[in-house]
Length: 233
Image 1 (cartoon, rainbow, N blue to C red):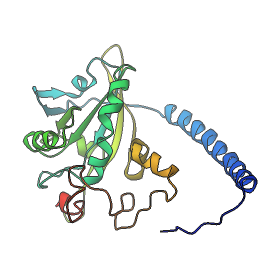
Image 2: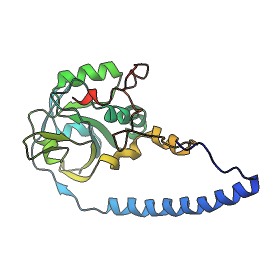
Image 3: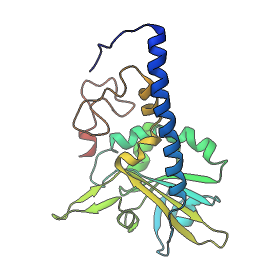
């Protein structure tokens, strides 16, 4: 933790701030250009009839759009054998319900999908007081096809946190348009953006490259020990 900084006069600070601002604006323009390239990616038609388990019973991929033309699926890491959902994914989806209020008015549906059975998802969702739709992909190839669950050489399955985007045209055809994993989804964690403005930044230390040892399930911050390791095993 770096707590000792050079202390300067206000004019010196303003000069340093203006120099950094120029770099920040250059990065913003670069990110805008990258976003345009992302929109220009080719699409892949989705022909496989995936079936998910939801609160109302089995549903298909088209149902997840909920009348919208765009769909964002968050690949929530929840192996069927785990006792509870991944702490990092929980940290991210803590931000999801607030975003859905606005996205639903912009022709975009957002859901979470995990391999764990629906009963586990329902119990954990109730505990965390989340409202977003959370579907189980148990028994279908969706996670594997989207590369959110990857079979290792020893036969074990590695879960990956990520996002996949889809478009449904007026004829009902569905296209896979984009996916990103691991640190590619950090932009969805609003708390990280606040921390980037804080004097000590993310101030993370620990075994997880994008979490550190401070993140916990939001109902466990008063616990004596961190929960992120035990949550996923």
